[in-house]
Image 1 (spheres, rainbow, N blue to C red):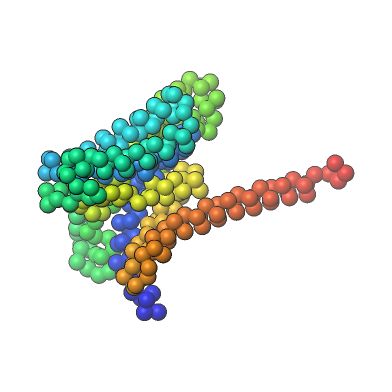
Image 2: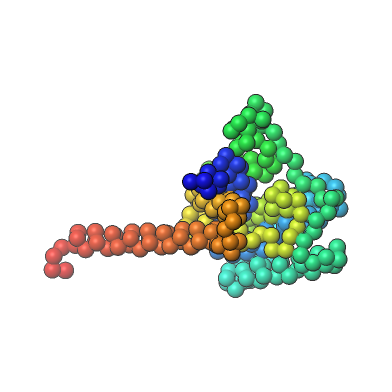
Length: 316
C-alpha cells in the first residue's frame, strides 16, 4: 500500500498529461493519413527530426516559437517526401516507412556531431523552452492547481485539437473528401475528387502535427535534444491508430492509456524497480491493446457467422 500511495498521487495526473501530449499530437496527425487510406509508419522519424530542428531553431534564434516553426517545417518536409514516395510513386508504405524511421536517428546524430561537436545530446543554456501557462483562479490551489495549471501551451492545445480534428474530419468538405478517399477511392474518383491530392494534403497535415509533437518533446517536455528521444512514441501512436481507425476521440483515450502507462513507468523507477522492467511497461500496454483488438474482431466475426448459420434455412 505504501508503494501504491507513492505512485498514485496528484502529480501522476500532471505527469500523465505531459507524457500523453506527444503521443496524442502525432496520433491526431496520423488520423488524417489513416482516414486517407495511408498506413503511415513514418511517424517516429518525423517526430525525431522535428525535435532536433526545434532545438536548433530555438538555439539560433533565441525564441521557442521560431524553434517550434522549425520543428514543424522539418516534419512537414519529411511528410512530403513520404507522400511523394507512397502516393505519387506508389511505393509500399511499409517498405518506404522504414527509412523515414531509421535514417533520421543516424542523421540527427551526424548533424549533432557536425554542428556541436558532441554525440548523443544537445544541452545548452541558450535553448529557449516553451513557456508555462498559469491558469487564473486555480493556480496555487490544491489539488486543481497541480493538475490543471503550469503546462506548456501545446499540452492545452493537444486537448483542444482533438475536437478540432473531429470537426475537420466530420463537419467539413475537406474531411469528407479525405474519408471518401480512404474508404471508397473508386467512388471518390467518379465524383471528381482527386484522391492523390487528398492523400498529399492528409500527409502534410500529419507532418504539422508530428512537428508539434517533436517540438513538445525537445522544448516542452524537456529543454534539450537527446539521441532517439522519441523513444518509440511514434510506434505507440501507430498502435493507437490501428485499434481506433483514426477516430479522434478513440485516439484521445488510447493515447491517454499509453501516457498513463508511461507516467506510471517513470514513477516505478523511484521505488527501486529495475529500469529494464520499467521500460517494458508502455510496450506491454501496446501489445495488450492490440491483442484485445484482435480478440474483439475475431469474436465479432464469430458472432456474425453464428447468427448467419442460425438464420439460414435447414438443409441448405
